[in-house]
Image (cartoon, rainbow over all chains, first blue to last red; front, side, top):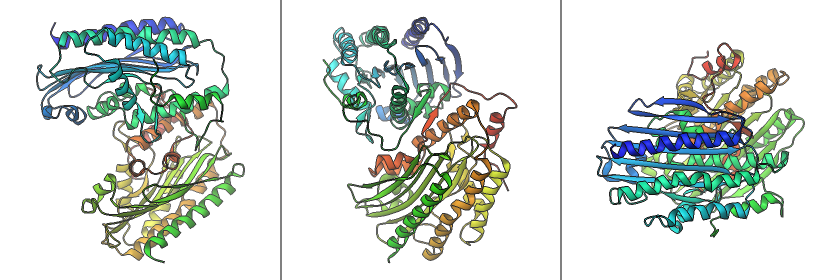
Length: 299
Length: 299
């Protein structure tokens, strides 16, 4: 297999394993498949579960697209590639749990080649968005990601964590959408890294998705909740929507490359709400949550 | 009064009249006031009603902002103004009714001066977004707007209607967010129109908001509905959210000029939802609605 095939295979195998794990965990709803082709070249398969007992929506999407000229959002990251052919493949995962005490979760790993196979890079990351943040959950999540980084010499947890804090920041709200994680546009600068080492990191990153998040789901899924917690969850999901449509580069890339609109917007929450100038009561759990949406050293 | 003062006064008087009319119509909820200042210069007042009997959310915002250098979204419309001072004032109105049979409604009228008082223009428009479109409602709405244009020699209904069809189009969905109305970036090209005539049109446009929409509210507000209609309403509101955050220039202008975030996002619906690859049943009222979200000559 060549590099493109190896990465595509990695993404597809990851999708199959993740889907099986979430379906088993949910125990109620099943994933549907939605395959799509991109007119300009390539396509993908979205797997989505809706209305489950644990997951109100879970989406795992794999795509592999290519074309004669890199789209603008990609040319920005690597200006020399403008007007040249590209290849991009990625795995993305979004979980919107039913219970407001379980955080939303997102991970994305992707691979690009532009203007030929010599110029390549891997991008990716994982982040968590609790409506009700628990310190032990956040620490578990960040510790698992730090351990991942520590297993690979080219990945510096501190750097990737800070990049995540910067990326998932809603400038217009002066707050993060959640409690961060790790994020990298290019694990090694385009075409300058050790391909095998970067591939191994991304493989390990995909393997780290379940251990970073499932213990948190298990810990929170039986917590009773009512109307108040549900409303706060929907309110915070409004921020998720704002981030995805205003800032998210994956969404922008998808819209620009005319990817499948349902696969691109799979990350949207099933329900969300907005309320004018809402401020949680001082001393409430919701007010405490707000304090967690600022960059912080969790470890 | 100079021109800026006259327009600002027009917007403020319009806000007071509209708020009084919607509060009377709702009969249950009251408007709250939220004033804000822009650090760079200027400010505004948002009036908002939430959780009413007729209106789940109604927002009427007036702003007047100025600064030393035009923001990028404005410089695009008038490149010669780049880096020069600007003044902008506007009235915007968004109605998200409770009953799914009453359309959502939006209107906005605005005035700009850039690089001095000689270069000015008026922008604006009004559009309607029904979840369940009724032909008689759409025709009433468009007829009222056509009559408005017919009273002013510089306003051509056909042109403004087509501009609206183009503007309120979600390229990524290949559909309009509603059934259109009128829209204009510049009623007369920047600095080239008859100021008094354009002012008179905008004044008339604001006066036309109530007669274009209230008869439709009165006709639909008692229509019984259930879970199905509510879910479709929330689904269509998802499109409203997508439009506002991906395409809406007022939102972009607000974010770029660091306007008050609550006032900018006042236009968001109180609740919205997304469902993966949803297609209404063939022959259903929802499928019929979809056919109305394409540009059409309604008169």
